[in-house]
Amino acid sequence: MLRVSVSRSLEVDPLYPYTKERERMEKINLKEKLSKFSDHWSPKVIAEMNDYQFKLVKIKGDFVWHNHEDTDEVFIVIEGKMKIEFENETVELNEGDMYVVPKGIQHKPSAENECKIMLVEPRGVVNTGNTQGDLTASNDVWI
Image (cartoon, rainbow, N blue to C red; front, side, top):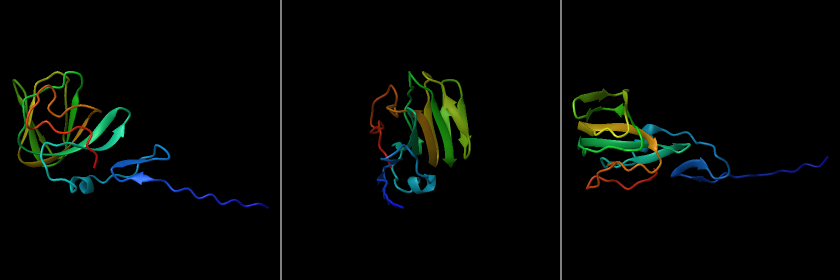
C-alpha cells in the first residue's frame, strides 16, 4: 500500500480574515478588534459579505450632517449610547439597538460619551457620504 502525506498550510493575513487558499472566514472577536484602535469617527473594516462591509467605529461628540444617496446605512450599538438626528426627529440608540437610515436621508450621528458601534454598508461607502471635510475617513481600512 502506498501512502502519500500531503501537508498544506493556509496563509492567513491578520488584517484580512479570509484564508488565501479558500474563502473561509476566521472567527472575529469584536472586543479584540475594538481594542486595536482609539480614534473616533474612523470606521475600520472587520469582514465582508458579498459586496457589504462590516465596520467597527468608535464615536464621540457630533458628526456632520450628511446622507448616502445610493445606499441605506445600518447602525448597531455594541456599547454605549448614541443619537441620530434627522430633520424632524432624533432617534436614541442604546446598547443592543439597531437602526437603518434609508438612503438619501440627511442625518447626523452623535454620542455624548464614547460609543462603540458596527456599521453595515456596501464596500466603498465614504463615512461622510455627500459631505467632505475634516471627519472624512480613509476608506477600506482593515483591522
